[in-house]
Length: 286
Image 1 (cartoon, rainbow, N blue to C red):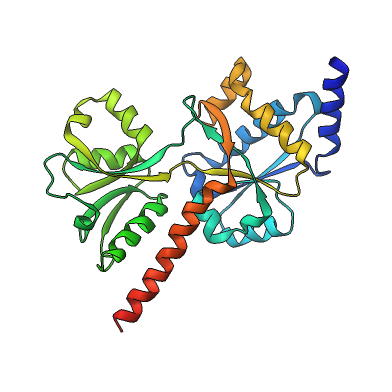
Image 2 (cartoon, one colour; image 1 turned 90 degrees about the horizontal axis):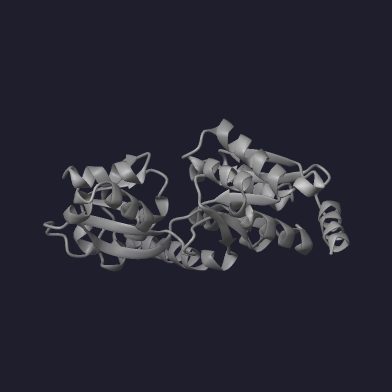
């Protein structure tokens, strides 16, 4: 049995890129981390995953999505983290295969919610026309979603956003009655509700969008299938030992879960549909 395990690790090692495993992050998707902390965590993560085979890594944070897309196209990246919308807008998803990303013990994805206060006259998405909404700055996909929904109802996309660095701050803005609505996620609402039950008594869900709020972490298709299996297996075992759990804390996550290319499809449909609606609306207003 030990010889089989050794051969498996040896095979994985021979399939590594000569310059190390190359990780890329698109900066808006990792705004919750400092650059130094993220690089440190990434290097520790790869070192821990590849302990048996002296696994090395190179981590890069990109501010320019076009540069990231070019490096991905040219095979200079093995693993990339970005929001679902960023993958659809900027990257050639045909170059990507399933990978891994932060996850939860219950096996679900976190999803976006749109909240209003319980006594609000707002009854549906269309009622958000010309309203003020608190939102985390990087949650661009919800702005796209609202634009889509309003254009479908024949309304111009007129919404005022108040941007925040965290969803918690956006929710508190709604709680204190400073905005008409707020965008959060199921898990952030649950967490804040546990800390302050008054929040759950004050707000209600206007819309469960069913849109994945988590980032995607996908592998380049050039990464060998055996190497992909090795990486997924080792990362999903991190929560089972002390050092792995310490590492997951740096990433602010409970476990590592699968990240699937197919889950980008609804986002791609939303993006393309909205582009068509915008064009149609522009023609109508000429």
